[in-house]
View 1 (cartoon, rainbow over the protein chains, first blue to last red):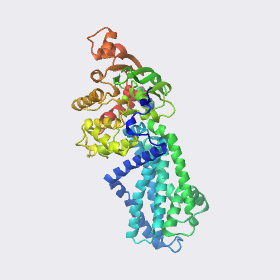
View 2 (cartoon, chains in turn purple, green):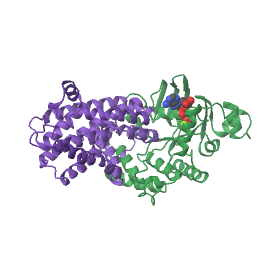
View 3 (cartoon, rainbow over the protein chains, first blue to last red):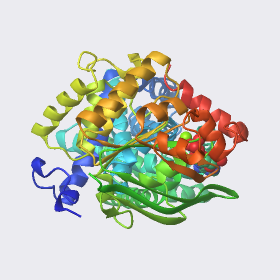
View 4 (cartoon, rainbow over the protein chains, first blue to last red):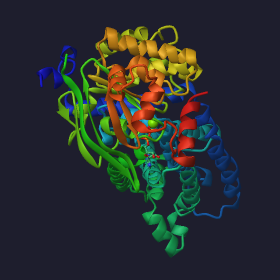
Length: 273
Length: 267
Ligand SMILES: Nc1ncnc2c1ncn2[C@@H]1O[C@H](COP(=O)(O)OP(=O)(O)O)[C@@H](O)[C@H]1O
Ligand SMILES: [Mg+2]
């Protein structure tokens, strides 16, 4: 064949380095999500209602009982990172539904015939869920300020919170996409999402410190990835002494990379419908 | 002019017990519009999905613009445009934004990106509507945008899966005109599938009649009539001669569901 067949549009300059192209592709998938959210932020705002209720009702009630040993900080301050983690988890664990929807529409197939790599598409989608999670974080932190909950909001701690939110959103949406690739239909994905959210939440340290858990629950909480998200956020926002930021980041990064790898492998499965 | 742009040999695909595609071979030459004509369930979409790297094949070879479809498929993807049977644009973005995202996915650089998007908008006649949300578009406008999106990167071959299904007759004529212009003015190589005989006959230089996963006959409409021995035959007669009756068994509930969903597309 002619050399023209190998470089289809020579007039468009040199082909880009694969690594640059990878980043361009991830950014394009993110831009698609960001543009959609900017046009219609109602869903994001609606999703702020539930965490608001948790903070207002649950936080208020438990503050009065003073049953949990939260040290020198108020229970509401203790609860805020837990509710933030809950909100990120819940919004991300259903992200697979959006993927199935795009698959059913045909959009995903169209994207898959462009030169984007499977891993770039999977990473782009996982980080798209992180954008949504960041929206939640802003809503909840503003709410906490309004409620005069005392949090550490220095520049470093906010940067740390952003990192945790991005990692948490990417991991849980990655998990959701793996489930979506296995169950394949929106209905089943919805069912599984509902089945796992509550156990995930209650078996974590979101509502109560690990120290008050019975032994069996402690074991579950230790293998529950949500606990690491809560722990990281709590360490940053209320400066609890016994948190492990480094470990929390490490666990979420490794778990997120595992999901990325699984999604890259499973992606033909979700396309096939 | 006789350069072969798409070469398919002995293509096969099974879904469990269903032989969706078996022993399909054909060649598409540069600059021609080649039609796969067959009823629902004939295996047209499955064939196109294998050609566009979406579906792994069970047998056979594919070569597109001189590049064999094996291993690293991104080289093939840079050379093809594909408009799936289903919807492939995002209703909650504008027409311009849909083109922009895909221009980035195709790796176009900033300067050429804007130029190319402007050209495409003009080519498919959506300049005025570019900044409107796609969910406010008519079915015909959506199809034109999808075609524009698929040719942003100047592909060597454009695959169209049932380009006019679910459109009203006026919109269908509009889409036909655009496909004809692409072929005549841009010399685009096009492979389209359809279950409308009229569409195949008016758009395609050559037609492959497909039935139950196989190709029953290939040729220009005139050649097909000659092969059949009746130069005055209608396309229906031609089809009946080579593939039996057009309305043979369908894929049942699942198939009806699929084609209805496709027909409904987007409001
Ligand atoms: N993903 C799939 N799983 C199982 N069967 C399928 C799948 N896709 C297509 N089929 C079957 O393969 C056959 C060919 O389908 P298709 O290629 O969509 O036909 P056409 O596009 O010509 O209408 C049909 O019997 C269809 O039901
Ligand atoms: Mg089809």
